[in-house]
Structure formats: structure tokens, C-alpha cells
Amino acid sequence: MTSEMKKIRLLYLLPLAMFAFALNSCINDDLADCPPTTNVTLLFRYSYDSPKDIFAQHVGNVDVNVFDMQGGFVTSLRCNEPQLAVLQGVRLKLKPGTYRVVCWGNVFDHSQITRGNLFSEFLMLHTDRSTSLSDSDDPLFYAPRINDVGNPDADIFTITVPAEGAVEKTIDFTSAHNTVEVFVTGFSDGIKTCPQIEMTNLVSAYDFSMQPSTDSLMTYRQTTGRTETRATTYAVTTFYTALFQQDNNIDIHITRPSTGALLYTINLKQYLADNSITLHSTDCDYIPILVEFNDLGVVAKVTPWDKISVTPEN
Image 1 (tube, rainbow, N blue to C red):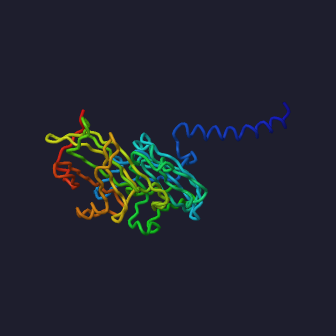
Image 2 (cartoon, one colour):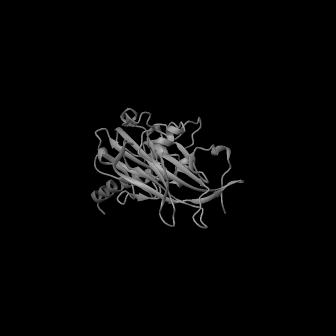
Image 3 (spheres, rainbow, N blue to C red):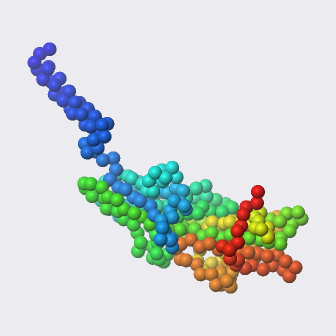
């Protein structure tokens, strides 16, 4: 081998040796010599009206969506329950700059995200929106926390990634659902004690500012299951719905399963007024309704369920 060839071979091998040294440093856990794989840590938190963080008790997955400040879509990723058990948040790599972040929690079987190139094109849809009929919705959560549903742009969440180093920030979640639980007692349909219950005129979509879309409303329908206390057996069903306001057009229908005959209708707006129930504008409300069938007719009222131990029947 000539001296010139030896020189060329040495110049060729030198970069490989330098790469191997750097790789060996990373393998031997000398992380200071390794290029960072992420530069953003986004932590999740949900506290509602509790001083404690109760995120883990309520949220099973998170869809993270990142946009630039002109509304252009940058990236998205899903954090599932096993990942959230390790880190209640997400790590990602972004170019230096400022970004807008929107997260949705509990995107399960009843929910889907439609994506586009711009923030304004993104929607959270009910999977049965096209048929307008389902049994419920997912108990959705949204981040950032919205304090005024009439002015969601006041609470946008941004994160600025530096040219060097990393950034860590916490994003607070808010509820994007209400829970309506209907208990029925005294009902009979032959040997059956479980009526069918419908909720009508429910919102089927949100935009990515958590504003509801009313262009396609839905009906939720369930046949109740049996639950019992020490004294009484109830037919009960639980609906998760998109957030609704005090002034709403929602009706709850109770029907006889054997014939489909309508037995009783609750106008939810009137029910809230009659029972002095005030809804939160941007957080989860639990609305219990007790419907009693008796010799005098039918009555709907609120019962202090927190004082009654209700146990599912085996």
C-alpha cells in the first residue's frame, strides 16, 4: 500500500472512529455527550375544585395537538394509559419557536378527531354523528382550562422552545362533558322494571377552542340497568354528554320498551330551574334525576344521592 493510499484510508477511518467514540459515550450513559432527543416536557394537571391534582382518576388517554402561531398544524401524538402511568405528561422535540397546544382527554370509542392543515379545520366529533343516535358520549376533557366559555381565546396555551436547552410547562385540563344520571323507581312493564330513556338535542361536535357545534344534534338512548340500595331497587342509566348551558333545548324521554310508548318527558331546562340547579359554564356538572312512578302519576325530583349507598346488582 502506498503512502498516499494510507493517508486516504486514515482520513476515511477518522470520522468513523469519532462517531464510534460518541456512540460509545452514549451507550455508557455519559448523556452529556449525546444530542438531546427531546426539548419539550408538557405535564398534565386537572384539579377542578379540589386542591389536589386528580388527573389520574379521571383521564385515561390524551391526544396532544401542536400548532404554530399562524394556526398551521405542526404535529400530534397520543399518550395512552401505560405511558401516563410513567409520566403524567409527554416529551417531544420541536424546532425553536412559539407554539399553541390543544389536548383532548378520554378520546375513546365515541369520539374522533378530524384533522386538517389549519387549527380552524380541526374538530372533535361524536363517532355516530352521521346517524344522530348513540348510547352516550365519552367523558371528554380539554386543555387548556377555559375560564370563560364565551371568550376561549383568552385562555390559549402557548409554549416557547429556545434555540438551546429545553423547556417544561404544565397544562391544566377542564371538563368537556356533563354527567346525567337518571334513576327510575315504581316502573313496571310486565316482569320488567327497566324502562328505556332518551336524551334529545345533544351537541355532537366541538371545535378546537371547545366551542360546541349545533349544526347536527344527537339523541342518546339507553335501556336502564338495575341497581339497588338496602331499601329500594332502581332502574338507572348514566349519560355522558357534551357541555350544555342553563338555557338548553334538551328533553329526557322515558318510554316503555315493549311498545315504545312515551310515558314521561322531562324538559331539562325547566328541571334545572325547578330544582335551583346552577350549572358551571366550563366544568363538569353531575345532574341526578329521580323519576318516581306511583298511584298518583309520575314525578321527577332531585335526591341527595351522596347520602345513599347505591350498589350495582349482581
